[in-house]
Amino acid sequence: MELEIDMAPAEPGRTCPVAHDYPFTAPAPLDPPAEWAELRETCPVADIRLPSGDSALLASRYEDVKTLLADPRWTRQLDPAQGAARVSAQEDGGVFGMREGNALLQWQDHARWRRLLSRSFTAKRVNAMRPQIEKFANELVDGMEAGDRPADLASAFSFPLPVRVICELLGAPHEDRERFAGWSDAMLSMTRLTQEETAEALADFTGYMRAHIERKRAEPGDDLLSELTTISDSDDGRLSSEELLQTAMGLLISGYETTANMISKMVALLLTHDGGAAWDALLADRGRIPAAVEETLRMDANSGFGLPRFVSEDTEVAGGAIPAGSTVVNNLAAANRDASVFPDPDRLDLDRTPNRHITFGVGAHSCVGQALARAELQISLDVLTDRMPHLRLAVPPERLERRTGLVVGGLVGLPVTW
Image (cartoon, rainbow, N blue to C red; front, side, top):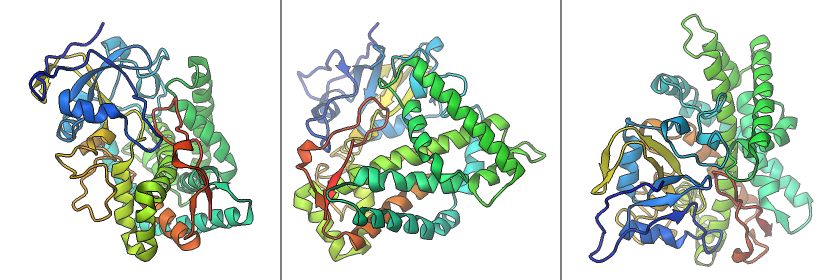
């Protein structure tokens, strides 16, 4: 059954569309879908149809998305038995569903978990990791320079770097990184895998991580997982065994997949937007790299599905009634292009101040590892501009290909030369 919403049109004579198939199709790999601007103007909370066939609502304005994500009454738990929409066509609804063992499952005391994990992602820890991240990045560039041209930056640099970092963080063997990539794709699948394939991958992933945690118990190191294992084994039980397992699995998925995809998208945007003017600006002044990272995070038009929330009681957003039992997808990338907050939003502007993008989320559920992600993105740009100042795409931008079928967005590859 289609969800109904009584929404006043933004302009006289304009009405909300009946429903859109979601996610939308973009005209080019680095450009936003036309529906973003249309819906922000005419229907800020719109009916959509998900890959599962279920109906949901889409929020696309900056202030609305911030409001919805900050509201503690709106849960991340999408339980189909309670009427929540399924994101994927799988029985359990995919990564946002309520399946047992879901690595991104939200347990009841989220605030306690967040406080514990935030202590492990301090600025001190992230800064201490910077030399190691820089070393990894330079080793990957060494490999690129020793190989053929053109090269695929995605497979040679963007994906190996975050997986090396997450292996370091979790004290996991680097040789297992190919397995991590497969498990991550399976957990984030919308339409790529069947229910059976996803279940098999989840079982393998869970078994691997349980065994790895036991190894850390027997022989702890100075990595984050050893630290979290100590917290789990403490007398006050501050982190249960199940929370520890899900935290380790969630860190691997969120700490690897999103950052890896963002490195390629960031470089592609800087090399192509306005004829590569931003890349040239970084070559002239690498002190602008932090600003470049923030602006490309804001400009990312291929970030993926968005953040869904389940509404347990009647509420109102943007002047329209949203009934209890609705699932609302918050499109952060569309919100980051809202002209009421970001003047000239489709222009990549390294001097944009303030840059209040919400790519890492809002409030209590904002990304706990965002400091590490920023460090990896900044170091990637620092090393690439230093070692490969003449980097450029080896194909026209329109020939780049989006990764599809996952809840996170990215590029299939990024052919470059230098």
